[in-house]
Image 1 (cartoon, rainbow, N blue to C red):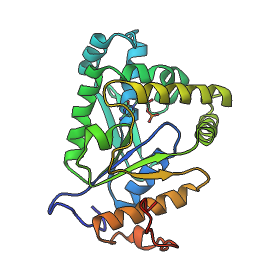
Image 2 (image 1 turned 135 degrees about the vertical axis):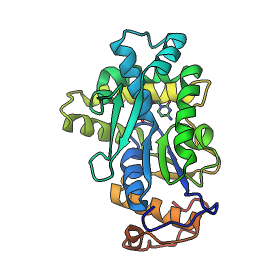
Image 3 (image 1 turned 90 degrees about the vertical axis):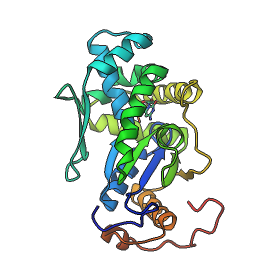
Image 4 (image 1 turned 180 degrees about the vertical axis):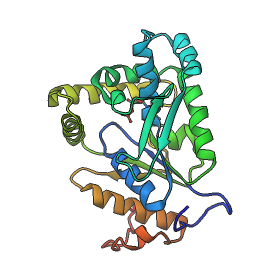
Length: 259
Ligand code: DC
């Protein structure tokens, strides 16, 4: 680890869990936080998307849990992390780079069905947990702080108003050349949020010890600054060069929820 944030367990680097609904600004914040801390960034949603893409290509039904479980055992899903790149990781399925393809509406349309199967989640959770065990990780998703790694050193639950989440996701997609209407994005986000929060296994919910961050009307830079401050408070040390360059906040965070 570059710099060095305080370690809650001697010899083991911290694990930071970031969960929340679609379009809340989790990825931007998690990537920037990982970069500032010199940690590995893991996007668990990208892994579910990669499996979904593989299922679509092989015509495996998103409702067939057994077939999806077999598929998850057959395909090799890799996330290759390169901090200098933007985004700082590539997603590979059996060696093919699918980083852009997994963001397509066809995948977004069924990923919540695929990820709702307990057998699929069990497999993905094992892989994700193994990645977190080494520490020095910022892991984002829906159930990182509750199921994948409940013992995470710092947990955040990032959210924003439904309208803002849809607008942000719409802007991102259009920037990537994926032409969808704001209305379609709103519908997709609402549908996925509903499925993700009501599924039986590992539903989207805030861990009781997760810090709630509402990013509505807040710039990405400000969000990252607040997260870094919270990490430093939680881990009891300020040591990374990037963290030191961030101005201290006004107010001082004495509320029940410091963010
Ligand atoms: O973060 P995202 O929107 O790319 O995630 C895509 C889908 O994957 C999301 O709708 C729900 C699912 N997912 C999940 O079930 N558990 C996770 N830890 C991450 C994502």
